[in-house]
Image (cartoon, rainbow over all chains, first blue to last red; front, side):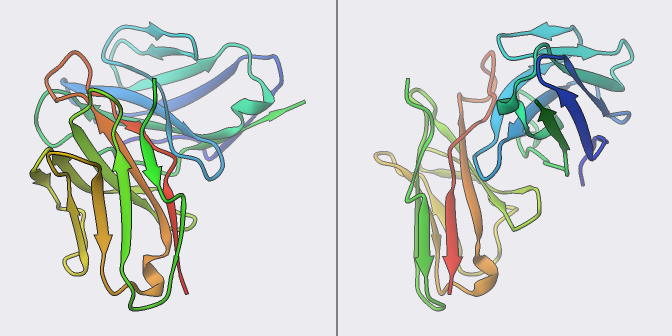
Length: 113
Length: 116
């Protein structure tokens, strides 16, 4: 079972920021938060991950709350090509069995022109 | 920098035949993972392999399914005597060895298996 909760769908206007929330209230201390997306029928695409601190890369920013019970993925300037299902996943590095990525239902983000 | 490669991209088999799915990990990656996505469902973990070792096959069906990752060549997911319920998208992911600075899993484009 997925250890995260995400809204089933969201809409965003092209050019605007898309803010995708995720709740992971049972996250443990050594678990990271990963975000992937799956554009229709393609393989999941890695976006970003973080542990405690906020992270930014060329694709997105990840904001993790201080208590680590929730996070937000930010796509700063959404384009039509960002329309996809976005998955928030908690998992660990360095041992344990947290390599099993558990994909829930994710959030279908639709970017509208 | 080639990503994870999978072939074939589409595979059609009749019931009772065998299906062989191949996965070549990213350069420098020695860990491979297989996931299955049934229609309208999320990806489900099947198996985790290192070169010549199966680390965790807890997600594999008990019968007909097997996986290997030989010293040389791609990882193979083999399904014997396929049934219609095996129709799905099968994704392979690869990562650096666990314990490195990052062992993020990167996914291939998948193989879509259709059983007639």
